[in-house]
Length: 232
Image 1 (spheres, helix red, strand yellow):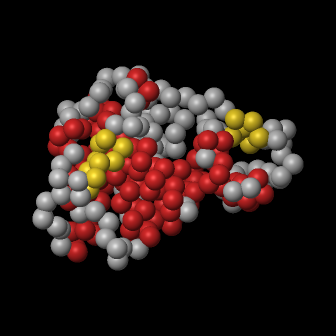
Image 2: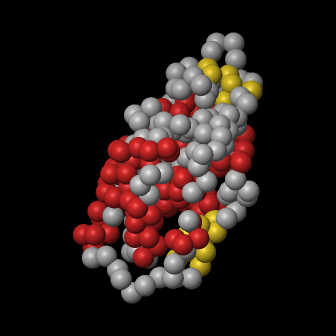
Image 3: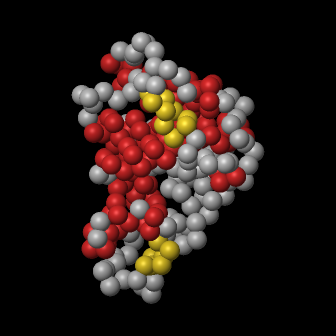
């Protein structure tokens, strides 16, 4: 259960080499249970949760340090958010949607130095405050309309390329965003987190870096219905 993973910090700290390689554990799990298209085999994963539980414990025992780079901190929290979301699903599987779980984003599921965190706190109080809007296309909420769960762990030395790829893949996925000469239908992610993208001018500039068709400030944006069914 998730509650069992909320542990007090011990004095066990991985050596520097271990800290650099810690996300390899998550990478191995993703390769086993996540397809290239981002579909997750929760049924199979549920039969062996030791790997993901061990990874989350390692994250709790080795939190970000003051000397870490921004990319190291981002990678840590993106991977933590995604792993915690997957484990939340596994602990409640089978189910049709993450929204079938009571208050899924407000459950305390992670602990560092006796401070407990929910998914909501990780997203809004940590990740969104790091001035990196591309995180919205890297974190996954276990739903069809969410950005795909990457089958690669995010790593500091590859993060720029990975974030660029995650945004491009999301904006060119016609099931999540629709671009045509006549209309543009965006994911509600752009509506819910509009402040993170700044003014409409800034949003247009951001979209035009990745979208298959250029938009302008005069473009009227509509928003697609969000599909909360499980991404399996």
